[in-house]
Length: 273
View: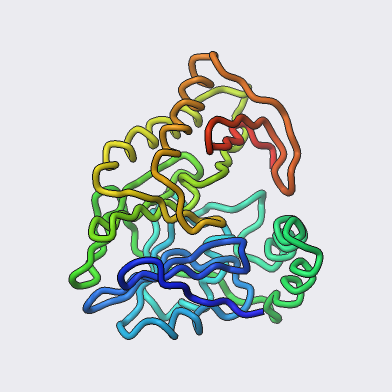
């Protein structure tokens, strides 16, 4: 299996990690950027280098290992991430082969047994060093690639340090896992709504920018969804907060928890795993 880059807008490519996780490459006149690095199956750096001609920076939407697990291919590049995700792990797993194995056996297996088998064979051996230093980015920072700018929007909810990147020229919001087809918010003490309220504030914040983008470039599947899904998630979060809506417990793949759906949105809002 081999990853490929698909042109999706002017000087903008999507790299799908075997129909599991999306990475995006954006090139300006002086620099290039890769947004997220996938799980780390195979050598995504080769694919990135095949489409760029300018020096490269890495922009992480968040530090979950399905988005930062390929960071070992890019440790010679400037890496940008919000400091609130510095200590972030996923169910106690960091950027590790333990996670890559679990991901292959859960998300890979939902695609096909053959994909699961191939992913397991692509786990790097020996296990790579995924430690990295990073440059902190926060709300309102701008990544200038020369003739193309990516505006940073701090969007806590899925993780405390989640960042979306707005490309006003191409009218695209790179939303990572802040907003996609299925969102996970971990279970809170006493099933309180504190995290749901935080995510609701993030949704309202993103919608305040809606006149500057038409579609979301998302972290999973896609690569694009219509920006209207933000309003679907607003309906869900506001309903959960005021008590007019409630979901039910389900188990699907590695997701286990309470889930609710509306329109095109699916929110796991008290997720145990």
